[in-house]
Amino acid sequence: MITTLDHTIKEFIQQALEEAKQTNQSVIVSSVKEVDAMDPLHFFASGEELSLGERFVWSTPERDFTMVGLGNELVIENNKESKQRFQEIEKEWKRFPKKVISDRKNEIGTGPLLFGGFSFDPIKEKSPLWDSFAEAKFVLPTTMLSIVQNKTYLTINKIISPYDELDVCIKHFENSIELSHSFPYSLDCEKVNEFSTIEYKTSEWLKAVQQATKDIQSKEMDKVVLAREVHLKFTEKINSYQVINNLLKEQPTSYVFDFENGNQHFVGATPERLVKKKNTQVLSTCLAGSIKRGNTKEQDQKLGHQLLNDDKNLIEHNIVVKMIKAAIDSCCDEVSVPEYPTLYKTKNIQHLYTPVKGIAKEGISLLSMVERLHPTPALGGYPKDKAIEKIREREPMHRGWYAGPIGWLDHDNNGEFVVAIRSGLLEGQNAALFAGCGIVEESDPKSEYLETKIKLKPMLSALGGIVNEDW
Ligand SMILES: C=C(O[C@@H]1C=C(C(=O)O)C=C[C@H]1O)C(=O)O
Ligand SMILES: [Mg+2]
Image 1 (tube, protein in one colour):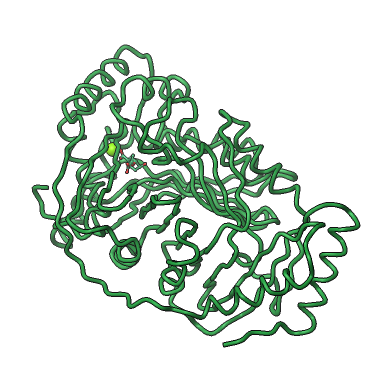
Image 2 (cartoon, helix red, strand yellow):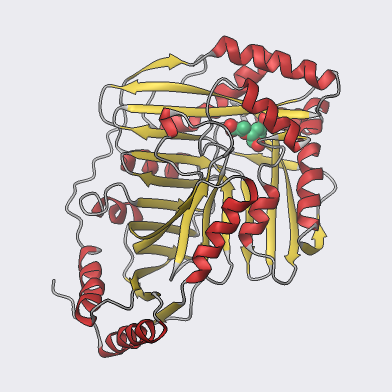
């Protein structure tokens, strides 16, 4: 297939190039076209050759918004600490004028947008596992497929600099359209991939939980989340396409994400929204407090009822509600929070759930909300600084991007971030999986340990590992 751009797009590119030359400033040019329906994972696999190491996948729990990015047209990253890392990403993104040409009205989730994330704790010393992940890293994809409410769009982005040549710019758009229609791979979805487990510092983790309950009893803090990691070695190379495909199918009430960073994929299926902003509407979510799913409908309801009335879990949950409400109050008007939590069920676990809604105050950006919220006591603890300090000191692992914010933002300040839990870092035949628990005064190390096992199941199952009750 040979693609030639129509006259309007060519003119648009020419104008952008002239503007770049006149202002001596690079411009992001984005063309958006509605296209025929396409399987997003086929599109993902089509980038296997040319965009290897530079892809991402995002899908909402309702699957009403899925996007796949191929190639890094722009990378914005930094290793700054605390507040600054959020502000720096925003500053860099704002620096570029954006010009969008679209054959439809500008649909949210198409056009120029950044996808990426933040590490949990930029102050903790780096570990070899996470060495190639910056503390904050975002990419503008070269080509992006977005499926918004059953309509499929193709976005092509290019940074046009004052020194670019018109022919080269036009070729960039033509080539990207051609490549997005080629699917050279046969995508088999064989499921079983055997593995051996290397349990990681279990006794140290149990001890850390025990110690944390003591700190809480002595009123040093109210809650702290402690995580552990499990390393798996598979007999075959892990196929990221298969893992994402399994997560999409097996975890229908969770977001699915993949951030490919060189040889590694940071993948997960999280039920936990941090914050979503659509125009001025803001939605955050409190998700904390857990119980397993039942084998029958009756048993499942009974367990759910037990969770809704369990003091230990309600304490765990209410600490999160209090903090998220305060953070949203600081940047929104008309904040509303239901009085009692309800249940949020995923395939393997049920949680206590409270949504927090508001209307964004003038001039408040999405990333400033992410910065105010991260980490919530669902992943850090309360008080925040004390809990982070304890995690840094006692947790026998390095979180990297696990439990950090991951998501997207566009140039109009719309977007969504989730908390990167139920996740793993994949590389070749190896997978590191992560899971943590909210520790409060009444926590029992053994039952918290069992809770982490349930939380590891979604990734384990997607990787093709056999999941049975006693794993
Ligand atoms: C820390 C994790 O999950 C968090 C902890 C929960 C709990 O302890 O009840 C529940 C949901 C999440 O906020 C994880 O999945 O790794
Ligand atoms: Mg818990």
